Image (tube, rainbow, N blue to C red; front, top):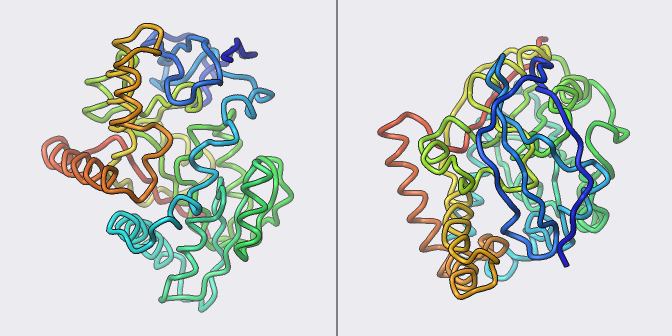
Length: 335
């Protein structure tokens, strides 16, 4: 049964300003039993950062990330059909981005990679398949079951929130945060912690939603999938993300844009399901069937068709506008 959750008022994480304007409001639509609260998305009047205010309190993490949260079971979902085209495509995308980042780390034969929010270790499993260097895989996550699964897969995993976990400093060649920084209470502390655990000359790879993308503007009024209510707390543009990373001591090397089929899936689910005000009617059931919010990672024919279609749509938008709603920033800690 959905209940009200504890929330906290926050100020802009980039500049500290408490002055903002309302962008939109939205509700949870992906998981049935988390919260019925309405959440406000606001934009800082001083620096332009977009964020959730008020946002869920840290004590509510176990509520808004239920045990069936999709990221905790990626390896299990993928194991159903590892020979599928969808599984191979996802693995290729992850590995190609990782290899590019690793190539910037230097010529060492052995590279230590830390995956923040590693969940059950699917990405870490893929990182071990890199051929250009021997990769020692490390992860950190606050979900106990996910940590246990990742450790069983052979990875060194730290339990807890990244900002608080007992992780060695000046130790890693590459720190990867794939769609994590938008989930955390204090992204500035998060990025500073990444700076601390990296070796001098190490690389920080951050991937996060892009609030300046065409679809983010088109579906700005509550339905954009990148909102991921109430789990995404801060929404960066290329400019506001670059500002954050540089203020934490990094040298930004490049920002790239990639397809985001998951966001399109959540957008369509929100639009279709909202036709039923109580989200219990025929349109809600249809949205769950056509655009399943938690099962889109399964290697099924349905997902292959929709992921391919949404990826093609993003590639067209990128060709026209120069960006998508999924961006990655590569930064280096000074040697």
